[in-house]
Image (cartoon, rainbow, N blue to C red; front, top):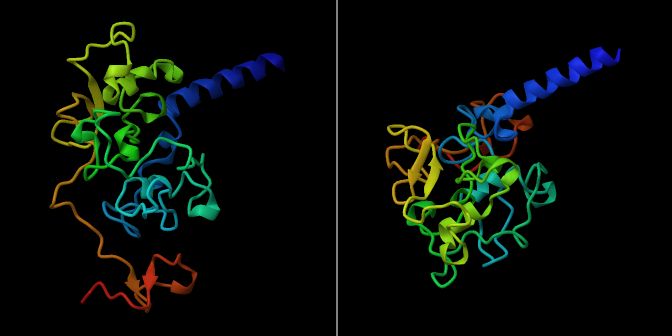
Length: 229
């Protein structure tokens, strides 16, 4: 019995290591974040937080990648799904332009000039770094200073961190022509901002176009918006 149990545990361990190379997003599949039919935001995102405001400046998080991330990673009462929630009032600031006296953030890691979740994280399963960080910080993020050094270089001893300040590589999968991989900070893409990117038209009007619309989430239909006009 113990032998069978040991084999089962070993099998589960191997399966988990194969399925979750970097984190739980591997098991979500693409449809965990995107929806080809009922998208709620640009780039066919299936998740979005419409309630939360940024405690740093009191502004909406609309327009930030954080609005998608926090559609899952926030408490339900604050517009999320309660999945490993984070709290903006105690986390690294986002939604603001970085202060050059504090950090030298590569422009390519900003979204519309502002710090965002995607400044530090690249959440696609092709990223095998711990916590989907943009820099390989080792298993369990044991070398987190390698990430911090990208923006806070004057505060990190590059030599002891084993880093070359002239050759910092950052992960991205946002340029299909180049493919997923590591790129110099002046070449990495934090987002795909191609103007020809297909965007959904928005909520459907409240009519028979949506079967059983009464049972659909509120973002599926709208009694006032007609995207066909």
